Length: 465
Image (cartoon, rainbow, N blue to C red; front, side, top):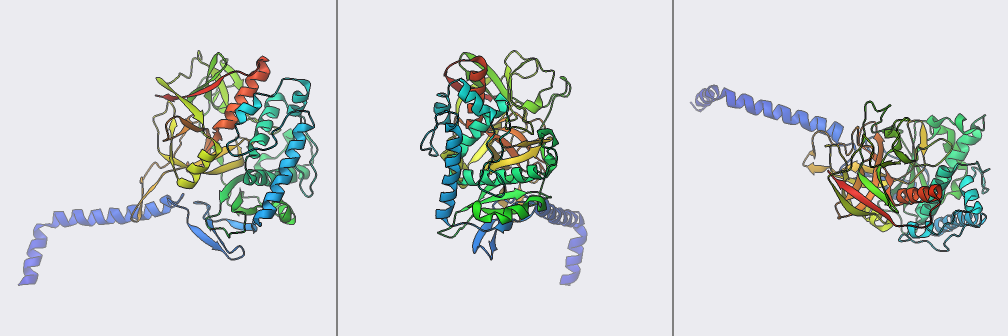
């Protein structure tokens, strides 16, 4: 009787049962899709144990785990090798009679120091020379001649990396990769460089390093690593930092303009240099025929320029935000705090797409749009939430999309500017943003050396649209 009653009840509630069944099926399907799509990038890094290193490292990202090629170095040796590179950089500046600080800490104000650089023949010669540590020995590679924008950007990058030994040692790895690829090129002209050979090189922190080991890893992402991994392995005692290999991925510009048609891009803020005010965006966003450019820093294979530009406020394409808020570039300790504590960041710009993200690491080199970028950058990933087996949001997780180039990355801390969006990977999972303080120093020096002005006030404002 009980079974018959159950059948009668089920026959009278078949619509409810169908709805429950469909809901369960859709839930299982969404969880499956979420696991496939959502595990890249992870909500939190998934560690794995490296038997050779006896150290736990973070999982690289959706593209796979690191493969450690060179193990970590004792702290003392790492500090010694970092100081050797710092001494070379200091001698490089002093050889052109350009003053250089004897000590640099994470709180060192680059802007206060570069404002002391005078526009004289010695400084111009510094900006015309390239600094590059050669691959295979401890000598400097032959210097190439740089134009003023490239030379200023290189000087800013060299000064920036002096702030921390991990920056110095990662830059040493980038120099080794670049010089190795250059040495293999038959033609010695910059235009001959095969940019497709250049990898993305990032700085990651080991999760649980041994007490006496340098707790940083230089991660090389490339699909063609064999060309330089062998050379780097022969020099493993010279780097002072663990080196890992990860799968390669493409980095794409997030918007471009061609002769005023198909405008895609944003202006996330404004920079004031002396009495002049400019809108800031990416150089690749602007067409070659744009008549509103005040300063343009589009990178080239032979140089260092950031992908950034300043526009006059009277330009016909980009408008300032409804409100401007005074902001300052984040100090090194503040960026480190954002990385270590997963502090939320967001974008300011004219586009509606906005999502919270977090700073994952520093990018020391990546290729985009046929150019190899060495200016200091941050890698931003979307902020995700784990809800049981599901990662939220379910869809549209990207921190940046097409048209976001030129947006500014700012902290939830009021008035703190971290960087400007330049590009992102083909999965829209990582965003690369030019570091705010080096970028502001670059614009300041370019403006001063082109206008022949002395030191002047430099201010930055984020837009609220």
